[in-house]
Amino acid sequence: MPAKLKPLWRCPKCSARFVIKNMWHSCGKYSLAAHFSGCERHVFPLFKRFEKMVRACGPVIMIPQKTRIVFQARVRFAGCVLRKAHLDCALALLRRHNDPRFYKIESYSRRFHGHRFRVKSPDELDAALRRWLREAYRVGEQKHLHRAPSRRRR
Image: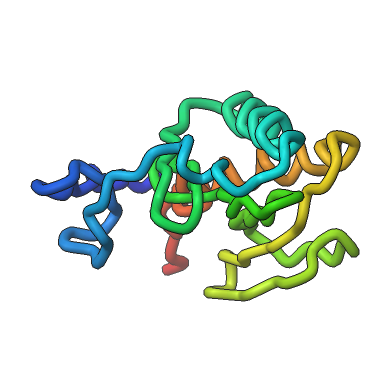
């Protein structure tokens, strides 16, 4: 039987949801439109296509923050910072992927690795990214934490 996950804590000020009670965050409310103010015209359609790929994985909450836009299932698993001419994206993956598109990989634990990549054109939103997004979505759902109790030998 899988382990039962605790309900998410909701900040009483901003209603943001977190796995841990009283997790540090800024309670600001930010608009999606503000993120696109300094971008070239092709960046918005790139973002909308990226968003559509993320939402195809399952139910998500999109959260515009001060410096980035994140996607959350139970936890945040994908996001991007809008640059003038491209998206600077990140995914939380269970294992390190050594694909040349990832310009930075940070390991936060044995099974939680942040992968950063840039999206400059629509052809970079491909089948490989779709696979990585599905894996990241499972991290966001915390599916990797659902484990059957270990059986002890006597």
